[in-house]
Length: 479
Ligand code: ARG
Image (spheres, helix red, strand yellow):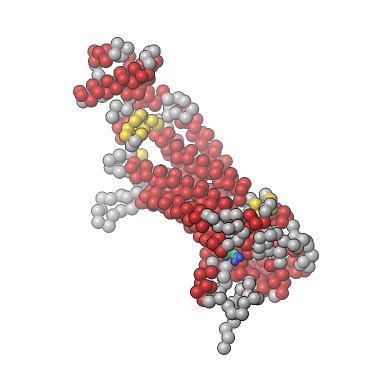
């Protein structure tokens, strides 16, 4: 008794089917079914140029379009799914269309290969996914901007080497993350110009002898142009690697923000309290409120870097045109997108509900003689060379340490004994508020500078959000 043979797109020259172990190794449909809507979109565009070339009659083209529309709805609702025997998404879609359309379904492979198909589907998918991810990254941006706007006047300690360095506006501390993620969003928009190229028409590797119109297919799929080299087009995965770099960078930025939240919410810092909904407890220590969201963001950045590294290693020294190694390109991208779709909303929720202890931040901002630079800057304004001013301020720090007092508590005689240039008037600059207010460079920490920057960051984020909202990949359900 012979069982029915599974559909294969390449059976002709073989006398037996593949060994089960090969079939298992080879199968990608369990993960690439995610590309099904894009395979249908691409099939529809391909059918349309087959029609223009006279390779499908108007009647056949109408049948194909109707079958694709029907299948698209079923894919989205989950009513259509691949069979366990389908090798990949392209096999599954062709099998279903042939089952429904008969011989007409079999005409759709003319002039294309899975090599140009998979490269096209993947580009369509990643352009959509990048925009969805950018939307949630913008939500995090808005959460940071909102918290920053509420803390423009909050003086906090600024750190270098994780040691208190100079007082800053806490809004400045928060806003720096918006600048970092803003660069990531800029990178995505820039990356999109390179992903906007259609491999269709490349065939297996050398182009197509049929009179098809790759530029028309490109335009119908929302790409800026068709590829200029068919060999490159079927083997180029730069767009995936570049996407994984941009997202790994997002992961690195998330990890640095996550690390700060861990520090701020520790009892040692005491700067922030996590909202109950965004903290976890301990199974043994009832008092614990753990910053798991921040820690997972920090931890998952390693995974995102791993996804980039894995793909780069797959691509390294790979011969051009299609090699099956390239099937390894999709899972790291899918995983990175899935991880970010979880991390980003959680980070936005955690950030927007953090309660900051402004009084605590301000009270420690002056400790550790973080105003020593003010003495040096004040002396420079009196005409003292900075080299000497630094020495004098350092001497003041030494004396204050010996006496266990603050810089502004050094008496007039002591100031004079350190330097004839140090008059009691220097005390006017020895407050954290004046130190912060004085730093009025455009990127500086004064409340006026920070407020101006926040206005720019709000505009920038609105522009990024607008980019993310415009979908470039045409809808499967409109034509
Ligand atoms: N499943 C394959 C992939 O993901 C599709 C391309 C197969 N092409 C081939 N020549 N076997 O890369």
